Image 1: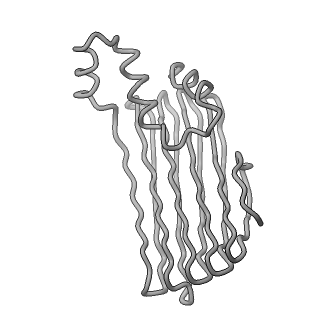
Image 2: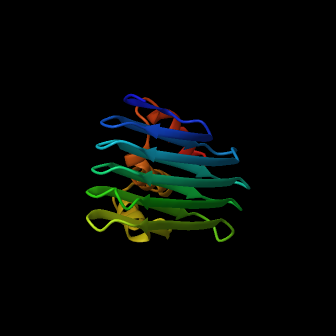
Image 3: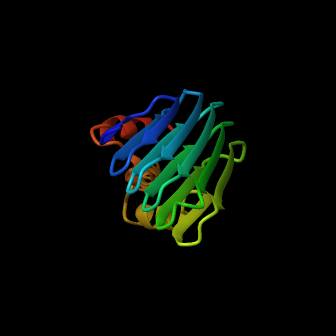
Length: 194
């Protein structure tokens, strides 16, 4: 597989050969319920995979991510960043696993899942995991579930920005690292609908 960046299908298994780079982007917009299952095998030395995901839920959507990143060869690199916003009675789950094989020395693997919950009835469950069987690696994972920052909202309102616009600006800032190039206006419209 060569170097590619595109909006990925909901289910897929990818094998990345030595020296190749895979870039995948996942987007789930309001009104969509999706089950996304992806497995990436970094099979050759120096293979790379970079995954980004964005999800916006405002009603009763159910969005499930299951991502498995297998580091099977030395010197591979992977990043995963998934950011989302859940409102209404939406249910979101992120289950991500990085597996580093015994021979996959010099691996660098990073996984993050960040969420903003807009309502008391929205639910987010995040479960990042590491399975490391090599000892010369740099790996990390992290997850956050929080709310809009009231101090930032207050600051913007005190500067004359209406509350709805302040909320929109804060959400767009939160999502900016995972917004696909060329879809900024579409994502902004979706955020304004939340």
